[in-house]
Image (tube, rainbow, N blue to C red):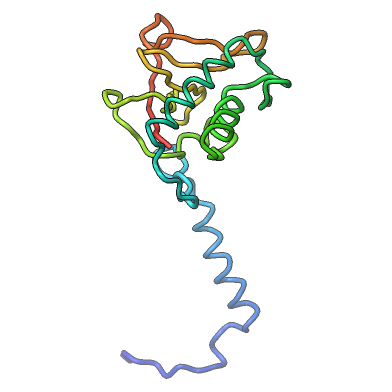
Length: 174
């Protein structure tokens, strides 16, 4: 029984075949589904300094001023109307110079998570199981501004309301 065999070049696969095998092994690892059913959050590539209390208040006041603006899927200006993430992007860009992600699912990785008991004006409230499916801007006293649905308008709602109090919620602070 031989324990060590001399390495013979003739027994190695050709270079193109070896490259193909290695690439296949790497791609197979990339194709594996993530565990837990959730995609990992994208690494935060942009750093934003924490909002000042003045910026947070300004965000809340500006959001309140947009109540009544028509809902429009994909909308992101007062003239075109807003969907929920478009409303958030417009307010944060115009009042704090921040550019949040465009989709609600991506907002789940924007800013830092905050305990519900630490919520303050200007924070984002995200609703849904797993990935968020809806979002709004907290404006104080248990209220938030959001663009709820087709045919509606931007409105002010209570977190403790019948519908919203039953929804899974997380808070994020840019």
